[in-house]
Length: 113
Length: 113
Image (tube, rainbow over all chains, first blue to last red; front, side, top):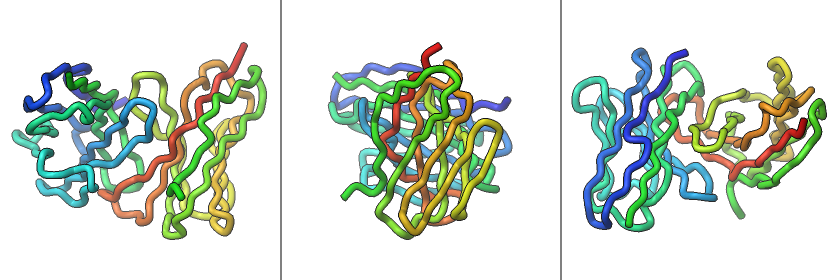
C-alpha cells in the first residue's frame, strides 16, 4: 500500500535554530498537509498546500513557518527559529482530492532544547 | 466550549466485546465526519468517513452520525487485541480537498485477550 514517508523520524534541535521537516507524498496525490500533535494533546491543523501554494492555514502557522515543494517530490515544513513550545510530533498528510482519504505519515518527533 | 470533545479513556474491554466510542461537537457547520485509528508513535490511519446522518458499516466497524444531537459514534464488533489503539474522531465543514480537519482528543482503547 502506498505510504507517506517522513524524515527524519526524530530531530533534536537547539532553541532558535532552523529545522526542515521532509515528506515524500504519495505520487498521484495532489493535496498536502502538515498537522502537529503536542504530547498529550489533540492533532492540530497547520497548513494545506495545493498547486504550489498554500490553500489554508491555521493561527498556529505564523511567520516562523513556511512550506514548499522544492523539487516536485518532497514537501517540506520549515521552522525558522524554533521555540521550546514547537516540540511536538509533526505529521505530513496527503490526499488525491476525491474525498477525505487523508494518508498520514508516521511523523517526525521534534524536540527543541 | 471545545469544538470537538472525546472521552480520553482508557477504555478497557475483553476480546470479543462490542466497543462504543463517541464524540460530541459544538459547531453545527461540521458536515463531514471521520474516524482515525492511531497506534503509539504512528500517524493517524483513516478508518471511516461519512457525511450524512445515520449509519455506515464497513466490516466490524459502524459509524453513526446524529447531526441533530451533534453526536457521532464508532462501534467495533468482535473487538480484537489488535484493535488496541487511540481512536480519533475528526470533522470538517466542507467536502473540498485541502480543507482542514478538526480532531477530538482521542479515546485510548485496550482490548484484553
